[in-house]
Amino acid sequence: MDADNGIGLEQARVSTRLPAQDLERARRFYSERLGLEPAEERPGGLLYRCGGAEFSLFQSAGASPGTFTQMSWRVDDIEAVVSELKRRGVVFEEFELAEEYGGGRTRDGIVRVEGHFPSTGARADFGAWFRDSEGNLLSVGQPVF
Image (cartoon, rainbow, N blue to C red):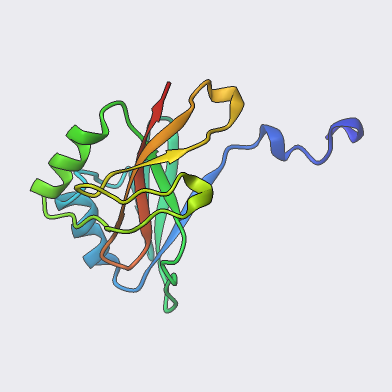
C-alpha cells in the first residue's frame, strides 16, 4: 500500500451482493427469467459473472427494501433486451421520473433519464427497472450518445 495513494480500493475489483430469502427461488428466477447460471456455488451463496464483473446472491433472513437500484446491466439495445425479458416473464416497473432526471413517464417499461457522467461521453440513458424474485430492484440501461 502506497501512503500517497490511499488504501488501495481504487485498484480493487467491486462485486455486488444481493440478499435472497429463498436462494433456490432466486436461482430459478435468474436462470429462467434472466438466462443466467451461477459460475460458482457455496453453501448459502451463488456467484454470477457478467461482462467481467461479478455479483452474488446470498441466503439472508433480511430483505432489501427495494426502494433503490441495487444493480444494473449496461446493454447495447435496451428495447431488444426488455422485449426478451418480458417474453421470459419479467415485469417492468412503470413510473413517473423525477424532474431532476428529466421528468417523463416509462413507456413499455423504458424511460429516458437525462444527464450522465462526463467521462462516458453519453448525454443520457434509457433505463428500465424490474424486481427479482426476492424484491431486489435491478435495471438495464443503454447510454444515449
